[in-house]
Length: 287
Image 1 (tube, one colour):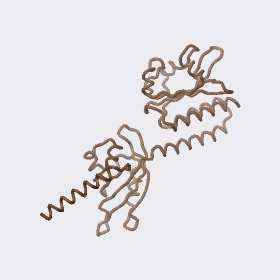
Image 2 (cartoon, one colour):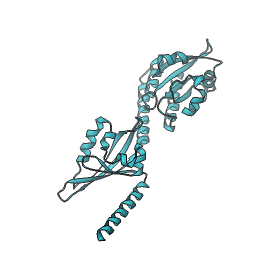
Image 3 (tube, one colour):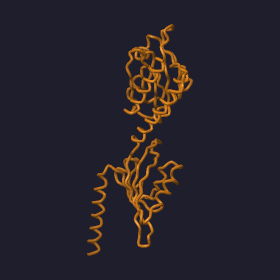
Image 4 (spheres, one colour):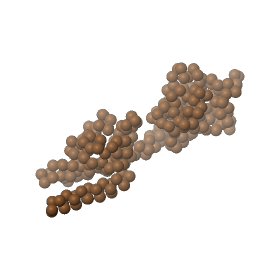
């Protein structure tokens, strides 16, 4: 009877523990010295899009890019009874193939012989924060490099290529109005196929594209919105599109177009980035 009572108390304790950690927004897991998961909370399951039972026994290092696994192993193995806790960051590869960033704090537990028998780890998703830092650095470097570039052609090429350094952006182009032919012409492009370019390199003044750019207003089209206009806009396999007017002396002189094949919509931080970058183009034209 006593053993049965202890078993029931233990089961109740485990259930209570799970109920608590499942309500937390942090990712929580426990794992063995060979990095195999013995417990994960609901947030952990949701993040990796996997069921609890499918995660138990999995070596979580397999979620990391190959070139980061040894670094993380070294950090975890550095824990001692005198220094049982460590914090670090690393990337993970999600089920859809995209990459995210996580920050973890690990706590090692030791037996009477001083050997690790388990780790408790608490983590959080820091992907957006990392991407914000990345954009700040990209924009800072772009401004510095533009200051050393005098050619208009080289400046526009630099702006376009730098914009494509952002992971979520797969292609783009810069259009200018041609007064003689009354058309909108693609002058610079990157990340686009030749076949696609042949269909979007010029728009006459009666086209929807010409009219939109002439308005001088930014346009962001999500995946759902693009589906409606795919036949008109020749969007190919593009999921998200942004049309940012280039302004000189208050008038639209063209547009910078960016596209993504991987995300359904551009985040606020990317929208702000491309809007600011378009201002650089206007500044370069003015000088």
